[in-house]
Image (cartoon, rainbow, N blue to C red; front, side):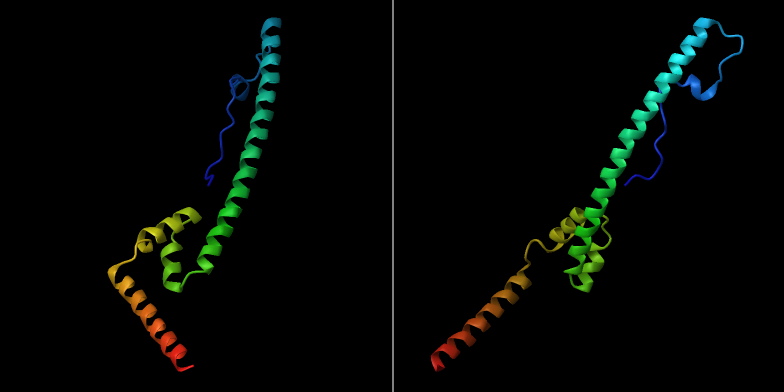
Length: 129
């Protein structure tokens, strides 16, 4: 996220710091006028490019916030705490995947026990029907 203002840089920096000398020659005045015109054009380009960049950042941030919120809403409270430290949806998913992406032996045992229990209930129900 953008945290600081971008500086207005131009190759025509003399305009930013020093006014035109009243005793300047015609050539100096022409150079000053050319520099001023170029500075204004550079400034307009800078503002246009940075406005587009900031607009794109706002759109991206909104989409990221919506995705992260959607992920967090679907998690249990304990998992929400782990994933809520992330500021990006991708980071939140990576955190959860790294921790829970590979089943542990107790998890596999518990899941297989549930499946066996369900299978035995289903079998006894079908046999008694």
